[in-house]
Figure 1 (cartoon, one colour):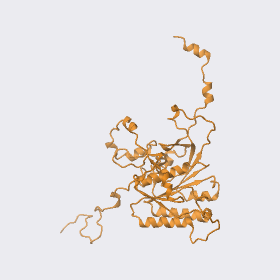
Figure 2: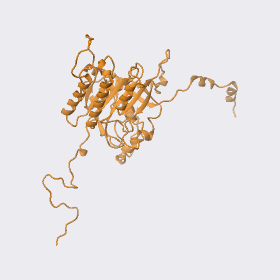
Figure 3: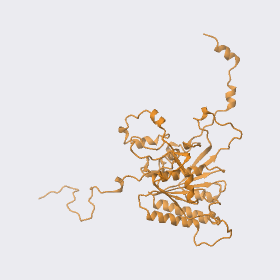
Figure 4: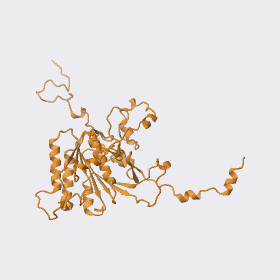
Length: 388
């Protein structure tokens, strides 16, 4: 009588997977360039080109693939447009496919160039100790590290750069770009003929078809970024695009593409709230169709103010406030943002040519009147001269 050990497969049909045997799966393959797992739940994320914005996105240290971010801005400034330029420049440097909506291909000339590495700051920093022992726990370190730049995770210096540094005074050189900028079908109104022209398909639907064709024909390892600056701006979009039936169907179709290609596609949209305020029903529906909603509120400039002195250059003055209305949250624990409550604080942003857009908690500067009241009285000056 023969005895057979339990849970042992005697024979199997050809082509049938054996339980317990190691199968070549996609998890063992390295991630595409510019993509790394989230420190919260391991989902793939990519950088927005702004390190402080990556840390704000619900603790994922980047924009998760398959999500869309809506950036609203008040007034006539263009801080949201600068965020889009960093987002597009990061994609081109990482080798991603960038799809531009509304603007011609010449928009690429406005992208910022790569900043030179600061050798002094690297040499002054002391070498980190016991990094080899923390290779497994680098994800847990990133949860409470709000000041991390997000370039490379701790304990692995050989990993490629996740978020590059850009300089607004420079222009992105073609030799550095590994990806390609793909312009979408034009959405602008006719320039010389103001009469309505019959069209078989709306411009927004043509963009969705263009994106769907590009995603179907590209390999599964390619990462795509959709850049939509100044949505519904009359100079860039035809009057029919501002109809609720058109723009809501466009955002709904874009959301469907993001869910279908959840490991390849991300999108960032900007909207001018001076033309379309948040109190309108159209904007509220647009916010519901986006995974994250940020609002930039520039502070009014004081006329006749003196330029900042050399001593105050280290303390960057806030140029506006930032409100995070919605962030990508994926599980009942809050996704990281609700646990740290960093996005619930009053945030401010400041723009620098070398550091880019820096987001940090807002704090009021000291008042000059209080400083003048703290002058020493004559009695105090006499006491200071007495020796005890």
